Image 1 (cartoon, rainbow, N blue to C red):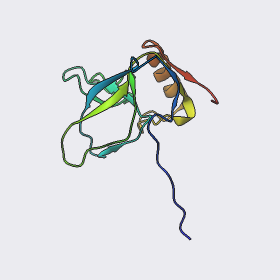
Image 2 (cartoon, rainbow, N blue to C red):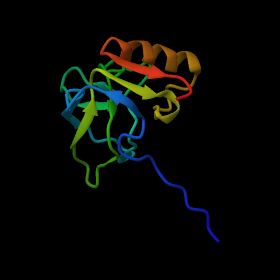
Image 3 (spheres, helix red, strand yellow):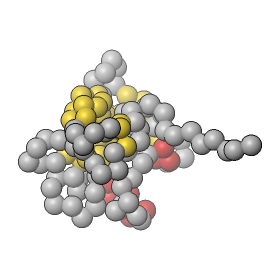
Length: 128
């Protein structure tokens, strides 16, 4: 019998957030060659376009600063941008439920991004 693996679920990384939808914003996610991004992906904002893409360590377009977390899975079926819900402020998340770009490949790089998220009131908790 084949083994089935579930992907990330909407908001599964959230421990707490502000009342209502104060923690969330609708944003434009820039098309990526991968085409799919998982809920819980740590994101950065591209300075010139105000669009979002996965936080990329070493980038120079604004996405080098972690500034939000993708709320739900996003799939770009065609080579176009997608409107998505992003956690951009005032929440607590489970570290183990976050998704990272391949450039964030060490604990030190994750820790640096977590410090950047804290500036937006996004607190990452260990072992939750």
